[in-house]
View: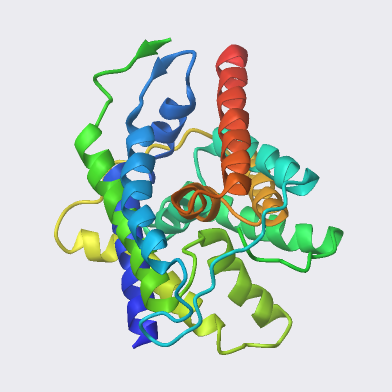
Length: 143
Length: 147
């Protein structure tokens, strides 16, 4: 049951990315192009996503178990450190350069978009490279 | 700044965003987890490389399969939406490395910090989002200036 819910979540997530235009690098760059002809669409993607997700997070507050009985794993970290900041800088730079962030890149990979087949392997290499270079934190894998 | 009204797609953006939020809500309330794509893709791969496939990875793998199935499900009903690349092989490789290192360093990307972090009013995530958005704006400004 829990795998079914997870798979359905992934499917809906991917369809949302496609409908919203996030899987189109040109549109992503159009949103990041404040100085040029700015396309504000992606701000509305965030508004829509956050508005719906916020209801769920408010409901989940104080609960210890999910529907499937799994533990409710809501990140507790409040640490604002150099890693959070430098990581954001590196990620944003790459996002602007290619117009891909991880989710849309994976969907584009599955759509057989040639560019995603270059970007995604490099991204995965970057993830392993990071873990090879830096010691993982205690609270690793929590946003 | 001029707004590109001819490119502006408010309804598909809002509804698509709503679906992303719905997916994050379902994964949270159903499985108790944060729909952060960078963690969902990396965690099972790392477990595989380290030869330890814990039970916890299977729900991530299921999410990932659902995500990868999305274009196939879409294609069964309609042609895939347009996607135009903006970079050649070399910048794509550089961007991939930057994104990979960056999301691991900050423990999240547009979904984990952006959607889920902001939805739960995390200051830590807000700081990260403002920084990666700012860096994205600067990078595109630089590309336009160089072009």
